[in-house]
Image (tube, rainbow, N blue to C red; front, side, top):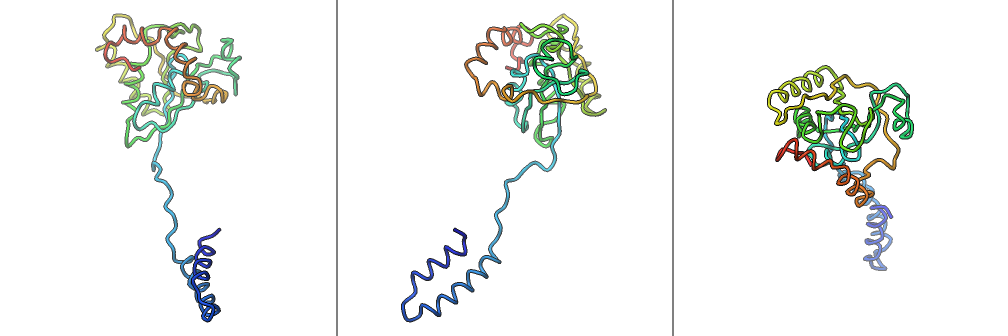
Length: 225
């Protein structure tokens, strides 16, 4: 029922038998005016500007879970990037034949969190000392990488790695790839928000893979888990 009809019904119900016809006409006209002058509902506020960042940190379920904790992050999407196959499937990527890495596209509000902050956080959620592997997952799809969306992001990421190489709390060299982004292909729906949809299986996998234990070993209190 529209606002106009509700107003009309209430007014008609209160009319007396004698003045019914007069009030009926007046009510209808008043409802028309009210409908034309009533303020429209204000849509929910959305960020005026958003930006994207893409990170590969091994299993994309875990990377999604880690970045969803950051204030200013609007959404995360698991997917594939860095390879040659167009619109690859999980099975193709897992076969190590596409060149793609499991990665996560992070949409964020630059007014609330900077790209530099996201990059710094990323380091503390991965083991940057191993090539083509993260924790119990081995092979090129599980390499660590930062896929910069533009030259500015590329410079920020490279500067961050340079600073980290001087301050890192471990001896091993950092082998994480930093490169300009190529096409990003969202993964199958069942991979999206896996840690929310299947919390028990996710926790079993993450703990069994030794991810958090290794992060604590590398980063101590700075570990991002």
